[in-house]
Image (cartoon, rainbow, N blue to C red; front, side, top):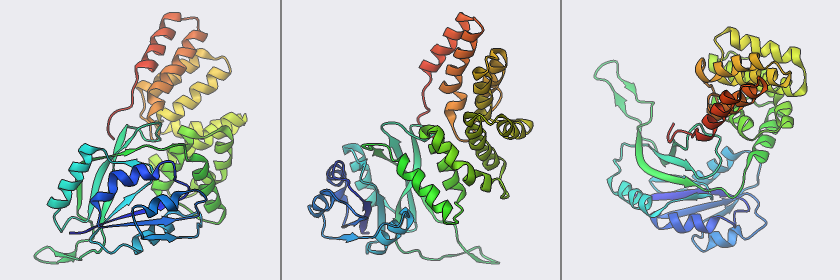
Length: 337
């Protein structure tokens, strides 16, 4: 079997050579789609491939990736970002996978490990990275036969290191808002990612700008978790804007249904800001011990512990304040989602 690597790039001179050096020997062709670089990105790419294409950027990563995939000619396609790195151990594992890959496998998932800050709720997660270019449709079942529509997915042991040179949230927030202003509604996964980035990287202004997006989403038919994460964004935005009535409107809707760690933290922060420390302790304890997070694991971990330390300090309980401060410092992300 043969293998293509497809990339979309823009101004990646700082990381591109590192990426291509670690991946290139594994592939029969490398396709680089440039979306408007003004640095040496294309010159670096040319050292590894002559399959370099220009694509006018339209604020749509999916469109650019689809264009890149359309240029591939091999059996399988690896979708690569310029800030990915494959170390020696995982290079060997990837090479072994190529030799052992069964033709019926259509998607290979790999561990995607963050080396710096992350919007994930763990240090790594499985991501679909290798795709069969052409799909064969297979009939199944001995009677009342049907076409298999679910892809055959293989969970590999390969770990891809994500080593970004900087944060991309400013770019991402701009794309979210521009798409919404054009009338787009997003997939469940993209809404979830937007919320994750807001909680990890968003400023007060970013939350405020997201209000129309998530107000609109609340009008849709949503799962309980999707409803909760949207309400959490709106509650946070209105709390920091000082619009208390709107804040409690969303907070009460979620807590009446059982609550989540994020909303309990929002309530805890509200009561901290008003000097009502006992109420803050109640809600922050509930964030850790009585509820689960829907998007941000920190809301039931180090964030809640830090806020509990503040609340107990406000009550004059130095022992509990120190204990929760220690809990916050010891807390770590789990290894895997």
